[in-house]
Image 1 (tube, rainbow, N blue to C red):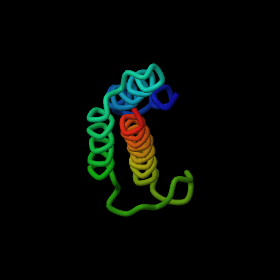
Image 2 (cartoon, helix red, strand yellow; image 1 turned 60 degrees about the horizontal axis):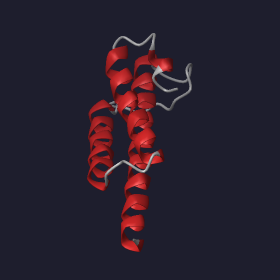
Image 3 (tube, rainbow, N blue to C red; image 1 turned 180 degrees about the vertical axis):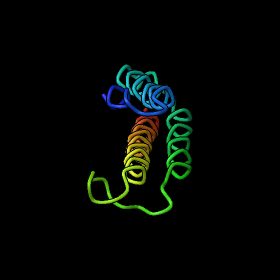
Length: 101
């Protein structure tokens, strides 16, 4: 869903790839095939990618309440942090399942 919203971005392929990888990892998790190390690596990847995209000055996420470019970068960075959190949750759940097996 997040990928579709990026169609009018100046760099939509970057976001299609970033969110597509997350969607694929979620599919693998749902099928019980996502490996713990991949979930951890993806979580770290999303955190680093978020830091790289964080605006110099965060002005929120509401259009009209600041510079549109800064707001867009902030939205993108927060989306990446959400993805990092989801991958982190997957890693925790996979690790917990392994301990119980």
